[in-house]
Image (cartoon, rainbow, N blue to C red; front, top):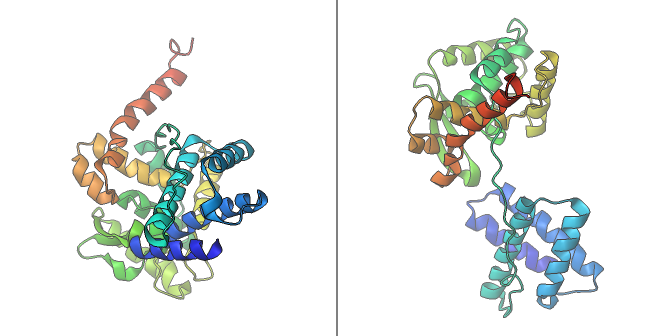
Length: 295
């Protein structure tokens, strides 16, 4: 079974523009399936019928309290895998054909209001080189709508300080160009002089105190730690800055197709969720804060 999984993952790697994140996600799902089949005494994917998959999904959902979105994603992996087995390996049956994907509600993205972001960024002491680094890092994420993985891999070679443009390699190694506001290039230069040139060991723009590029988890830790230090009283995560970028652009009249391009979304429907999120957030705040609404 492992040989077939490895062949499929290589196929996915080539098909998805060498996206290692996609391969890793498929690998986890398929390894869980293999473990279950082995526990049931099944030594071949051909022997896994519809009933086996229904029991597997039911068991996984119960043991992990998995949400419908997680189950839907796993089923998508297994459908792709069996289509590969049908087309390239010669399997005749596909046990996933008759299994319905559970309905999943699309989660509204969490974002910060402009004043909350301003408070977060202004609270750094830029006389401290490390704090200056963190302020520039999170400003970059908000100014350009970057995913945390994108800011981790960002290099100086990808930034044009004169044109104020960042060249970003997003999901599936797809390239996009994102501008940043006038004056931020000076913040980048000041950070580079005060911190980066003294510790960096490679061309990554944002590096830790060992001079090495950050991990996504490292950036998450920095953001949450600072939010706690300034008493923001909320759980924050780096992707909130990307959500805020999109929401604030649309709130201020930006064309949705432009925002789609800046975010690197393939489908316009992915971007459209941001057209509703502000109203929802305002309603939540109103319900909690207004004396009459709270009764």
